[in-house]
Length: 186
Image 1 (cartoon, helix red, strand yellow):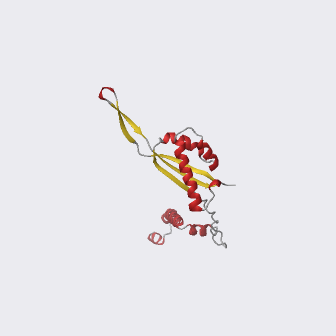
Image 2 (image 1 turned 90 degrees about the vertical axis):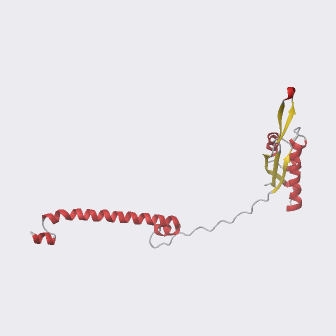
Image 3 (image 1 turned 90 degrees about the horizontal axis):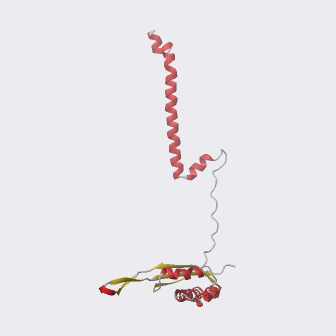
């Protein structure tokens, strides 16, 4: 019996053998899971390594596509006017009407608009048209209003005297108007 224990044969050794095999296979599974996790981390850092691993045998990793040639960005001519003494809410009503229009139609609309902000917006559009001709050698009559924004400027706070020695506040609002013209797309 002592010899059987030393050699690993006999009933007791036969019972212990499957447990040892199961323990060994669990350890191998943990090792393979750890290796897979390490490979995933490496693949995140280096995508070419992942592509090479996934490629079938005998084929090389897929090459990246050549970048497509970029179209030249359209020329955008800008002009802005800051601290204009008109409320931004009133100026936005006019700006929304001319946004996207051809410059001739925008000029005509602003020329006959009854709103006070139309005069200030027309001046900024004319300034942008002049910039297009003088700085970018473009034809001003072939432009359109690509962007027009009216942002709020600082508010001037004043007070009006009222009855019984009281005073009520008056807020004189200002605007920052910015216009961008681009060539008409045909």
